[in-house]
Length: 331
Image (tube, rainbow, N blue to C red; front, side):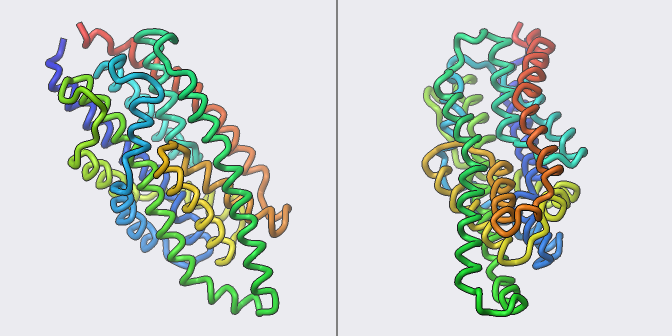
């Protein structure tokens, strides 16, 4: 059996690696549209998003506490269990980013954690109600993103209907930079908290705290790791969302980002861990469909949805297997 201190160190390191892969994997969520509309160059957009990911990490800890308490009680997890879940989600993120599939890191983390918990103590310790609420929110978020952003682009078109299209695009070019920055901030606010929740669970399992707490150093480390991952970029996924899914102009990009960011910051403050990938993808589809249904490349959208469906069971199996491989470390 390893010294529990080194198991704790392993959890923290792996959680930060997960946050790095989350930023790397989800770069496109914040900046795909601003790159797809050629408002910013890929590198300018990536570095802007990295800084705002870090800022967003300090917005709230409500999602971190939901991850730490609503799936399983921290008292029913071990450090080895958390290591197993993190290894599974990191591997999933690496595989899917190399394939260019914008799957949900949030779904992947939840699936990995569920699989590892089942391997450790069975289904009985899972908080079924909390898991169902999280999954329902994740399923609803792309629909709400589509409806909100689709309505926003219709409003924009109505307000500017008598203005030449070229002038409208020029007006929305700087506005889209603002909306992209808002989206990057909301990404940090939502997704950086998920790694914070895992580290907070590890601190309870180790005995540092009796209740779920997110120390300041955890916020800083999570924000920096996500920002660094974002800075490394995810060019294939940027291409998939930003241009292959639906060709966007600057007003459309503004509508998609603004709708997603408002939704994400709202639920982050409330403490609902939804998927940024689901939300922005739903928003882009909603904007494209509101303009012209045929403008959306539904075959690409279908492949993305297929990848979403596979994420939860796929990562649950991986988390289950990793725990059985590593459980000898618990002695």
